[in-house]
Length: 120
Image (cartoon, rainbow, N blue to C red; front, side, top):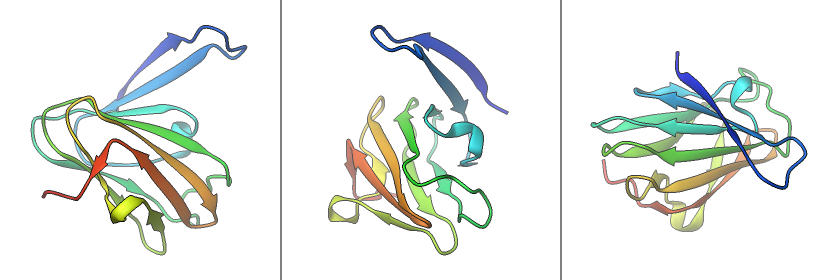
């Protein structure tokens, strides 16, 4: 159970970005598609990308991530999931670092943004 906030975005017809704040390890759900998931904790936590068989995200879905707390945030692939990123990095670099997950195939996602090697 996270807290949902809505923010206006100027220049867009939909004009809403929804933020889902999580304070412990979290598995993405359909309600996160095309939204912002803030991972905010003082200790290291993970966000898990589930297999299509568990959560049927459509190809093309984007999920914005941000490291809201001082604790590390790593993106973890669920069973049968492949996450492709530069240098195979899967952690958000610093507090307030953003990243984006983009689904490109049934169980394949790209992760890009301010990411680093998994430090924990």
